[in-house]
Image (tube, rainbow, N blue to C red; front, top):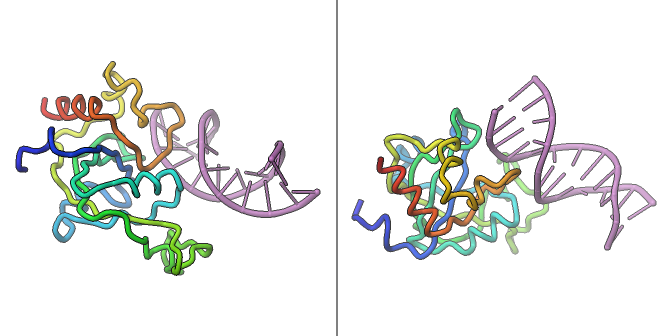
Length: 162
DNA sequence: GCCAACGTTGGC
DNA sequence: GCCAACGTTGGC
């Protein structure tokens, strides 16, 4: 932590992960506490990833968890580049239609900044009037990569500090 | 495990 | 280009 959580990043995002597949604990254990965010196979999510800049900050959300919750914060350390798992027949996210010469799918690298001591549950987030418009809380929202507004980011960080 | 919401596919 | 069928997501 270098005291920059609130001020430096120009853009904020939220990434979903099922902790049974990859949790914030797994990120904490990863080499350099860094991982490649591969496997995104949704165009809107990919387009958001392509907008990410080094230094952008990320809410790490545990979906399909008990309870579903924001578990911590990460940052972008490498901007979008081709997702090699799309070309790997043995990979769960193999995409036979993706052409290595003109890749369809991208990934970014992210690094852990902070694991919350108490994850912020979806239930708690829903109770915050200032988060009403948040994409995560929209009915039927399934996007695994979402933009987060600066004012939403501030509310969430303040909650995490309590 | 259920199922609503959503994105994608493919027949026409 | 429409849209029904299908597969996936993800809260509950």
